[in-house]
Image (cartoon, rainbow, N blue to C red; front, side, top):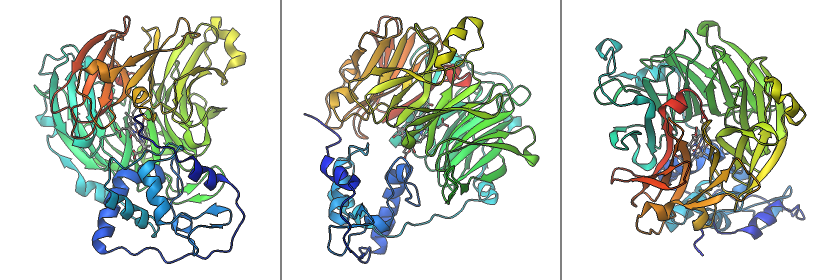
Length: 561
Ligand code: DHE
């Protein structure tokens, strides 16, 4: 059996048990040379901080502060009911992964690196520097001023059907022409670009790297060109633009993991305008020093951004109509907010509070929390998927990292013929069975009768390399499995080639899947006909290195999912 995450049931079970408390006193942290420390710091940022936090207070991943990572004096026991880990156990967890969703690093890091990380996280966390408006200004590069840009589209590409594809480990972005399936341009970006988002006009494309570098790409040139870059901080995941009438292409907002803040910039130049800290109190009334900005989405009905603050569980509605006198509504929801998307009406934003096993729905019309819906373990919607359920009316779907289901949540509708579904609103009306946990993204399209779900984090190779397609006309049927790795025709590789992030084309009749291989393996984008589920095209090239997220211009611009 080819598994990526090996089972560590005994360790986790032991960690969860309220074991007898023994009197143990903490040892000194294991020593590190300056060189080791610098190396470990870099690895921690690239591989660990996203889930565990820079200050290691935990979110999607566990708390990794020395008070519980350090070995107890006798090397094994507990203090306050918490198992102390120490170098050997930590190295084993890092190597093998956990049932809690942490992947094994034994095929990513060397044995020596794993042992180094096990020692590093028993030492106090390194606190990176703050990043001010001045720092943003210093990092800002306006490569092509607005006056030197085209005044009309200079190429013949159908921009609405362009796909922006993250080439994760290459630190690049591929723009692929969705009509011809030809690679249009490959551009340098920040490290491991997380998402691409579009300006309201569809002309400008923005990416944000994990290293906080934002790039602004103008697609009106003969060939797409990066016209400005800026740094938001040292760690970031989200950006969105101003989409309300009268503010098209005017502003960009970017959320940082470190420092915990969001920044507002000019939409067409990235000139920094304002930085707002998100440090403050959690929904439980406790101060948190590192409340990171997770998903951000622009409202279509108001000059507002929905900004989701992970650790505090606060959903901020930020009114950008007057950024000097910024008005913000803070809505209490649940801790560990992560990713999410609009319901079909685009009135409610649905966001996963992933480590709380909940989905929060915010009503952007009234500026209030509409519901907190309990779900199966670790919901992970991406932006989710909206469709009309034959029995329950409008629903929004999310997959789960930690459970083998796709949850369907009934969402309100103002249409008269949907009044009969009202009693079910904000309830999980159905759980569709998946072959295992480890889902990251689900997707459908208003013109489709299919729901696509991936499972790239599943420990079984054959599941991680496949996607699953549900027939929305008959959800009692099991999903159809599509073996993306096999369809790609690429030679087998040692590393699992994860099939991930289904994305529709503009017409809603094709689905593009990333086949995300190892850094030195050939990867591909595999395109299927949505009606027949037949393979249509394999887009592969030596430049297609570790493709992950794909963002169709039209669907991203108008939040169609
Ligand atoms: Fe993501 C969305 C954070 C790991 C691919 N990811 C998001 C969003 C956040 C986030 C906050 C929502 C952005 C928005 O909508 O504004 N992701 C994190 C992490 O903190 C985490 C767990 C660890 C880390 O260190 O980054 C993480 N994410 C990953 C990956 O390993 C993935 C699979 C591959 C990769 O490229 O790094 C990955 N995340 C994505 C993608 C989206 C995303 C493709 C956008 C989904 C969409 O359809 O909008």
